[in-house]
Image (cartoon, rainbow, N blue to C red; front, top):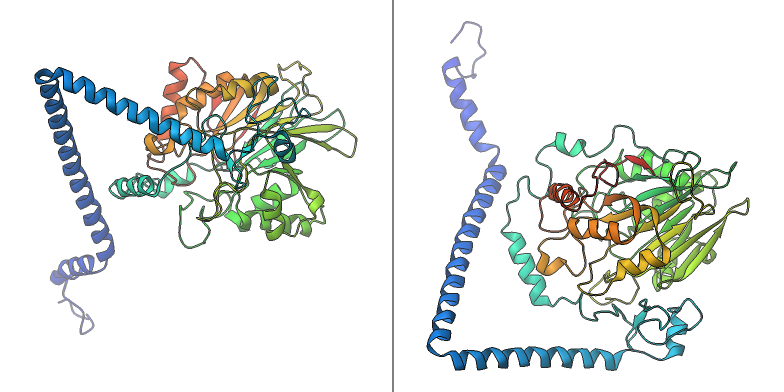
Length: 497
């Protein structure tokens, strides 16, 4: 031991031993988590091998049975097909019996915006789907009534598979540097002022929150429209559990960005009531920020059933909240008299904030047309026509997005979700994947599209960075330019169209 060493300290030879013992004692939880993850991965691999072996065995036995008893095999398959058809017919008849198909009911819902050119699920004039609900008052998807229905057994099956997925670097960025790279160094809030002749501008604020700048007549400032604002740390009914945000945009709810967004947001569009889209802490923060600046409350446009919910949780005047059914249009008039039209569009989704209120409120997307919409500018813009899809699945047979494009498009800018799509057997009915998003971009006639609903919260089973990779692949396959037509942005990044 060197001279002058205080008593009780270890000699130099023993320092490595002490460091090793401290290393083995401190990170017990980290090592346990790593061991658990490795064990889960090994079990998952074994289960995959067992499933593959069982599938192979069953397929082999089926083929042997068909060879030995072709008549019985054909009869069994025919009977199974008849049973499936009968069950499908029974379910369809059951739901059709419960649907309110009389004209007064649809008129009361506001489902037929043209004054009643048809009753029931679809308009007689052009076949567009109308807002429809059962006699119990719950809204449904009219082109496929049970498409978004998931049983408790299906939910548990999904969560069981989710449990066995690898944790580290799968659902969240693997390092703080990767997370910080998702956020722009200087968020563009408000968005750049649209140059003359352009179709407007927009800033992505993370998840499904986008701030549009809608062009106005010369001399007027742009009208700013905010979609599904959410700046909370978690997409959850509680602050201590639930999907956690990858990276905060300049401080989250208490940051400077929220104040700038609140100052700019003239209109707020809420597509549905899920916690990642209708976030009450964020809406309250935006309202407080406007009060601090002595600004009037933002104007809210929401689907049917959501107005009462908002008014019960936010100190808003009822006149500031407008409810819309599918295809209903509302007009916002600026101080100068310029008119901007907000139209609610159909979507294939569902609503619920508790286990007991499923589909008591409607869900929708939005199309926004500014006062200059339809006037082709020098920059190729359409004067400010935007489409926000909200959350939606891609119908298997019904041409939903072609109808929206034909009736309200083409659009200067569309905002489409590309994440929360895995596993497809569970998520496909309610969330599109990147390839379907590119198809919607083409079907709606969008000049430019911004990808949202990814790289913010871990909501499904795909890797956190997989949606952007698959989007680039789909764009190349469908000959859509990923740099100018269907773009991905950092949180706080902006685009001019």
